[in-house]
Image (cartoon, rainbow, N blue to C red; front, side, top):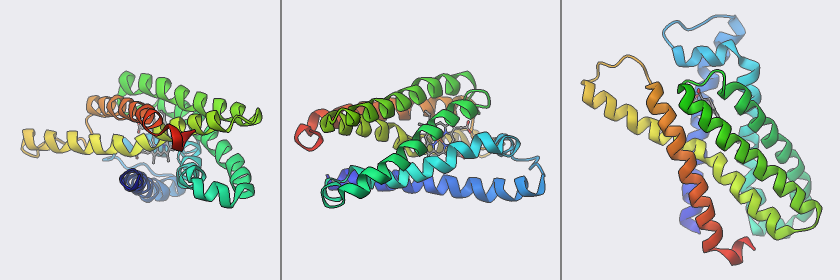
Length: 216
Ligand code: HEM
């Protein structure tokens, strides 16, 4: 349990660091109406700020609030807050998931491979959220919690994508002797999406089976 919490904390920190980099790079360019010629990766975020930031900003709110919602202690002690915050976070997650599709499919850095992974796992994320909401509407707390855990497992996968991308980038730099110009190879970025999200869906299912008492 403690190890899981630490792993989730590390992944959320990675996502927050990526978000901070995005803001630092994109913010001044969006405000000034400029384009960084040497940063092709960032150009898409700067060219489509609404689509990109209606994905990132609510996603960050969801990712920071969800661990609190999943904590049994918090729920039992502050049930009213859990319900109110839950509505806000659900809307944030749905908006983020929808804009993941609207930005990630047409402007995927990793091309078709990333775009297809975005459709598959983005739709799964949205489906888990909708099913969690429907479950709680019929007072099925057990299923509500299980679907919310599945949704969260996908969302924290964003941190693991970054880990895979960093590993691939290091290997690529080592093999080329540090001569590659692009920060992230698009093919490898697409593979990182598939690896990370598949791992997270699988680990989420494993966690639900391993801890039926906690997740029941
Ligand atoms: C809910 C929590 C989420 C947060 C906080 C979040 C955050 C982010 C951040 C910070 C980026 C910019 C990446 C970078 O600059 O390195 C990004 C991009 C992206 N995210 Fe999310 N995300 C979340 C969920 C999702 C989900 C569920 C999907 C769909 C499966 C998704 C798909 C994408 C895609 C396709 C991109 C564009 C990657 C590219 O540059 O090609 N995200 N997200």
